Structures are given as structure tokens and as C-alpha cells.
Image 1 (tube, rainbow, N blue to C red):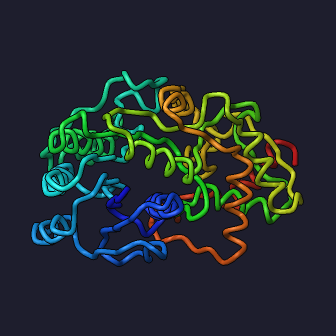
Image 2 (cartoon, rainbow, N blue to C red; image 1 turned 45 degrees about the vertical axis):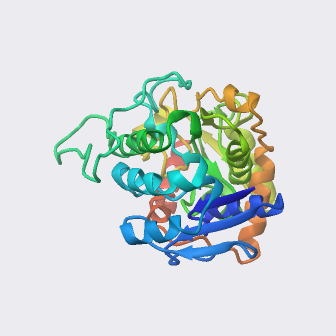
Length: 343
């Protein structure tokens, strides 16, 4: 197999490139060369996906058995459309990494692959779906952009030649968002650790390496498809996740569980101040049985936690990203909530 990875230098893109090399595949990685380097053994091609001349030059270096698009998170649908059109003559298959945010019901409703997607045309620009400053309803901008990009991939290649993967939360070595690293850093400090909600709450993060392996399986597949890519519904719990963080960092911390209503009363920002905590009914209720039937295998979450801590301890540094600074509760706010719990 010869594949083209759009991206290939950080987190999921790099995991895809490395996993393909491990399979003995030939890997080209197209990126701007600004965020690290692709794994040794791959062939990097530098260019900008929004520049027509760069796309033409890229197409001249084909053909490929498949394109795996991991770098479109900040591109408008029409940019994805133009890139896919340029590559369609020289690639058999297109694998587009989307997100569960593309569903109208996320995070409020349980999801399946038949759930309604947000509306967005394939040629939408970067402003499509932006909301007015005084808007107080759901912010569907990002999801609409990703849904439009899904349409773009299928319009350019035709649905039978496109696989759409919709992950939820992706964790693992190299994570740049900062969710798991924040919890590991907090656990390493020890003491009483504010733990959100109920320890029995099921959660569905998926390891970046497992997403990469499944993306490669889809690249090798002869048919198009659409999959939710999360861990199974009963795969792990918040208690298991945070317990693994404490264990991985030496076991000095003690988890103190705070009910949802107390955290809400203290104004804790869901999803960011205590990463992965959210009270919405659908956030951890995504049916990914289709992907599992097609070969998705999810390693234990404790393994993801342990490997991420080892990566951090060995000097691993993620690509700089503004979302990193969004995560984590201040020590003062944590102490105030713990005091309400009698500590």
C-alpha cells in the first residue's frame, strides 16, 4: 500500500503515518512543515492545502492507494473540496477524519451513525455557520464546518470511495489538547484531588493509536462507509480513568468525588476546568458498534494513561496549541469546592 497522509507530523496524523510504516506501507506526508516532522521513513512534501499550485504539484507525485485526511480541522469545507478534487484522479480511496460534533444532537442526545448531521454545503467558506455575538443557543459552527467537509470529500470522490470516521475524544501520547496531560499533572501533585460526578459514570475516550489503526484498515478497504469511532459504551468509567491517573503517577493522590450539582453551583466550566466532565446526556453515549464490527479494537484506558505519562516523563512535548491553556481548574477554586465537601 502507498498512502498519502494530509498532515502526518503531530498526534493523530503522526500516529497514522507511523502505524502505516509499521505495516510496511509507503507513506507520503503533505504538510506545511511548521509543526514538527513526519516519522522517519516517510516522505514529506511541503505545501499549503489552500494554495492551488501546491495541490497541483502534490497531485503530480501520485498515485496513491488511499489518502487519509487528518489535518482539516481548521479548513473550510470548500478547501477540503478543492483538495479532494485535485487528488481524486490519483487516489483510489479517501479517508476523512471528522468528529461527532458533526451531529446535530451532540452532546445532548445519544448518537448512532443514522443520527441527523448538521447542515452545511460542500463549498461552504470559513464563515459558514458563524453565530452573532449575542447568540445564546447551541454553537454548531465547528460541527457545521466538519459536516460540510464530509460532504466535500464525498462530492469529490463519490461516496463509495470515501470512508468517514467520526471520533469523540482522542487521548494518548502526543495529545495537544491537554485533557489527559492536565489530569496526570494534577494527580502527580498528590493530596486531595477533586473528582467530578460519579466514579461509575461510563466514558468513551479512544486511544490515538487505535484510531490510526482503524483509519488504515479503512484505507485498505474497497468500500466506503461512515463510522463513529469511540470506545464501547461499557469500556471504562470516570473512576477507572482517574484511578489510572493516580496509579500511573505514583499513587500519592486521593480522589474526592463531588456531585454534578455541587460543581454546577460553583460554576465549574464543563469539559475544560475538570477535563472530560460534562453533564449532557449524549456526551458519552455514542454507539460505535459498527466500527467495532468492522475491526476497531480499543485498548484499556489505563494503558493509554500509563503510556501518556511515560511519554510526558521522557520529555515528550506536544505541538503548541491554544486549546491547551483552556484546561484545568485553579487550585483556589478546587480548594473551595473541597472545603464544601468537608476537606
